Every structure is written in C-alpha cells, then in structure tokens.
Image (tube, rainbow, N blue to C red; front, side, top):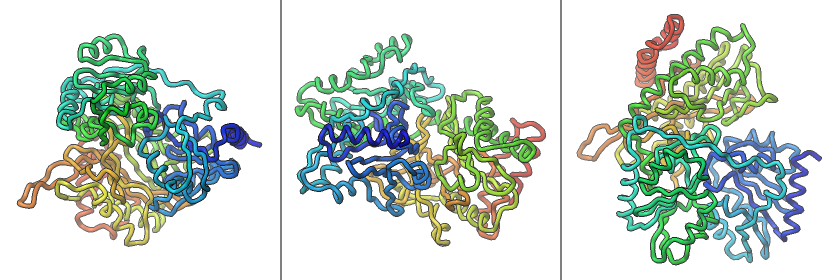
Length: 596
C-alpha cells in the first residue's frame, strides 16, 4: 500500500469513529483564496493531486476528486493508483461534487466539513441541494490535523511597505474611499477576509504565500477604527506606529472569531459570502444586520489609478527586456547545450532577477514542451522534466512581481519546422487574441459578453478551449484578481462590468492531448474610447511587450486588420525594448519584429 492509499485508509477510519457518512475537503484556506500556504495544501498531501483547484469527497466506499478542465489530464495521471477517482463533467457543464452528493447519498446521512475552509455561499448550495433529505451537516469537523503528523507550519513573514510612488494613493485616501462606500450602504462594519484586499488597502505586502506578495490577515473596518488580525511580530514597529495613528489596531490572527462575536448589538456588517467562511459567518451575532456583496476594496483595486497604469507601462518594458534576452539566449544555445523545461524556468528567473524592482515570479513558470503543453497548468518536476528537442512546440507561461506591478505572459515557440496543423492552430488562436484586443464596446459591458470574440475563429473550425479567456491582474498582488474576468459564462455577480483602468489577461488557446498546446497571452488595459449619442464606448490597449513567433503564423488565415495590428504591435515592441538591448540582441529582435 502506497502512502496515499494509507492516508485514505486512516481518514476512513476517522469517518467511522465519528459516525460520518461523507467528508468534504476543498482546495482552500481560511481566507478562501486561490493562493494558499503549504499548511493548507491538504489535497496534494492526501491525494497526490497538485492542481490549484479541487474538491474531494470521501465515504466508506468512494473517494472522488473534482477539478476543472485545466487539470483533467494532470489529475488522471496523478490519481492513478491513489484510491481516488477523477469525476469529470463535460466542458462547461456545472455538475460538481454537490450534485454527486444529492444524487448518491441516501436519507439519514451525516456530512462533515471544516467550516474554516468552506464559504457560507458554498454551504448554502449544499443545503439547498440536500433539501428533502434528512441530512445533518457538521461544519466544525477537522479530521486532518490529527492524521497529518508532519504538516508544515503556518507562514511567518514580515510585512513591508508598498510606497505611494508605486501604488499612487496614500493609505488615508483608500481608507476614506472605503468608508465613504460604507456610509452610502449604511454599514457600521466591513469584514475583509481576502489578504490581497487588505494589502491594497493598507499599502503593505508580505511573503506568506509563494508567488503572491501577501500577509495572511483578516480585517474588520469600522467607522473610526480598523481591527487588523495578524501575528503581531509580522508588522514591523515603524508600520505599527503609523497604523496606530490611523486608528488601526493589531490583534492576534486567531482572535478574529472572538472579536466578530463581540460587535455591538444593532450594528450592521458587510461581508462577501464567497470569501467569508462558515466559521466566521457563524461567529457574527444574530443581533447584527448582515449585508452581502463583493468587498469594497476588491472593487476599488480592480480599477488601476493613473500612477499604477504609468508604472505598469514601465514594468512591461523591464519584463519585455528580460523575455527578449531569454528568447535570444534560447535561440543561440538550443541544440548547442542541453536545455530542459526546468532550465528554461531557471534562466527566466535569472534574467528577471536582473531587472530593477523584481520581487519574484508571479506564479510557477509553465515551461511545457510538446505533449506537456497540452496540460494548461503543467508544473515541471525533476521527474517530468523534458529535454527541449529539435521538433515541436515550446509553450512558456511566466510572470513576475515588481514593485511597479505584476506581469503574466504566454508565448508558444516553434522548435524546428512547424506542421501545417500547428500553424493553423496557432493562427486561429492569434486571431482570437487580436480580435478581443480590438474590441470596441459600450460602458456597461461584462466580460462574458466579449468572450466570443476570442473563440469565434476556433469555433468556426470545430475547436475550443476549456478555460476562461481573461482574468483580472493585481498590482504587485495576485496574478489572478477579481471580480472582473472574460469567460464563456455569466458570473453570479452581474454587477461587475468592464471599467476604464481594469487590467486583463487575453489568452485564447488550443490543446491537443498527447501532442502540444498553444496559448498566446498578453495583458491589456481598458480605456475610454469615444462618447456618442449612444453612450460612452470603451477599448483595450495591449501593455505586454514581447514578440510573437511569426514562424507559426499562416498569413493566409489573417485579414488585413489583424495583420496591421500585429505589425503595429511588433513595431511598438522593438521601439520600446531595443534601447535596453545589446547590439546582437537588438539585431535579433529587429528580425523577429519585421513586417509580416
């Protein structure tokens, strides 16, 4: 019996001992963020699956894992021989673990979960689906701590200041904006559970989570005082003194539930039900009026200010220089020295590290050759590391955090002579990327309304990809930032519209299992376009600066507007990057950006 099977056996013993019929485990921490510390990576430890999104259901005779289409191929491989099975719905179907519970569990069942790791909105969905069954749900059940003997400790990094020269707004101004919004909503308190919201609000950053510059913390914003819940020693003395002057009191991280339960009777509190855990929700007294919506900082920080936009432009030049130097190095050295997926990641890190203000990668670099590229979120390991051979497609998705912003870029590179199918696939993906960035649309438009622009050329050829087209990007914060995105389905929160100042990724793709993956990704910012009698119109402008491999383009599939866009983009790439390159690098980039 392997270690994963042994852990499943031990967990099932705990189910029997506690009279539990089904135990639920999510990929989550108490902040319900996408990015979580090692201490809360329960699913990788328990199942062997290392993807960033999953839910596990364990009964006495069943162990299933649900994830999204980005990880289907990966999950099938990693779960083999584990005792867990991947439950895979068809593309864009919404069937998930809750549907399975409703369809497969009998009446008189006892469900259990750790309420710190499930949002109140998730619990409500479970309860609704189980209507008509005699089901009890224990939301205070932690079966993992007792069986995970070598569990990593909670992170313990220190906060550091993110100066106004980078972020563009003093803490006092941001606090005033949040409180003004609270006043309009007639709210006494605002519970903020997402660390990235708190980092933005207080102009601080941390290193509690790999690839994400945040400090694990909660905050309760009041009309006059703010309670910040973080281990005291994480906040340096100079920041603590400044915070006290602003009415920000620091409390131990674990005291959040106690302080919530002591809020004054008759007051009101704003929470985000998607990021407020069951445990926190249940600690709020019944005497408070609860208002539910997306957090105020989340909405405010999604619109970048003038200083942030200017800094994003600067950091895109630095990132583009590092990328250009990487691709130049790769082309000069490929097949002369051994280059693998791991060494690609290491070289990119080395070159980005030479750029001013670099804090670290914004996510684990995806360097995927041939069939590995068909795994949208492939993570190279020593065991999977592949030599970059003489024929195929190399997909590289990478990014960096800088004081001046966060980057995220994907390029697909031809190694050797590409096939006609590869060129067709690449060009159809490119058409989608270009058509989205060329969109002109009225104020009030949501991301899901634009998604078809990126997929149209693929759909017309019977092709598709299973993930969203664009996500919001933080400013020296989470590389995936809501509430805005571009995807095929309408979000539950239909209040989120595209606004000037929002930063998006633009990343259509195609994946051929066992062969290769192709994805072209740039970041783009929304700006105001013209105003007519029909209202204000908006547009996008690409900010990422890196050449696109023309060797993979079938020019006959592009129309004149698409060709013009590509030529203009390449001219901008050369103009902005060439002053920082050596003579050989400059000549090389000139060739890569010549007219198509």
